[in-house]
Image (tube, rainbow, N blue to C red; front, side, top):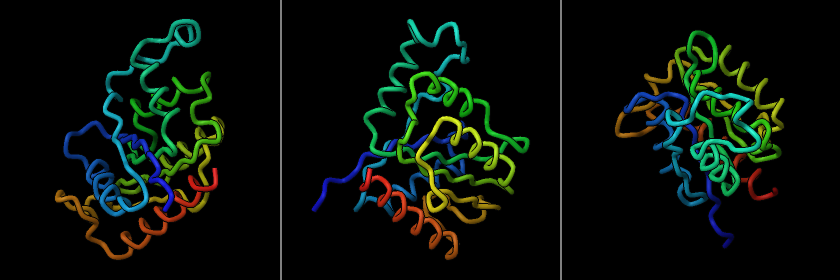
Length: 179
């Protein structure tokens, strides 16, 4: 049996009991036979992106983030949509990876779980394409009205959503296996 993959999850919401964090924990349980999922805890600790501090001597928090991205077999981003866009802390983190090419060809799954999510998802997909993240049609998902489909336990309570998540997990694992 092949070794389980290492997945780094980046949650766009900073709320302690956010729907997105609950969803990541539910995915971690569902995917446990296939991969180990670790939630990146330092999103709020990353300084504001400044190109002057990017190349020669990046801040330690940025170096740690880039190292976690480098050692992961895949990246799972699970985020809400804020004001029809990408949460600022998530966009800031991604900006810190541009010069390092940390996402380049890295198997990536994107779940936008929000009230609607379509515009934020489209915006983030544009960014992920520019940084050459290895996201495919099968490894992205929009979950509208997400708070009604994920419990705090955490479990996915909606059958159609659970089926979509399971398909995404399978596609994501396949993507990581063939990298």
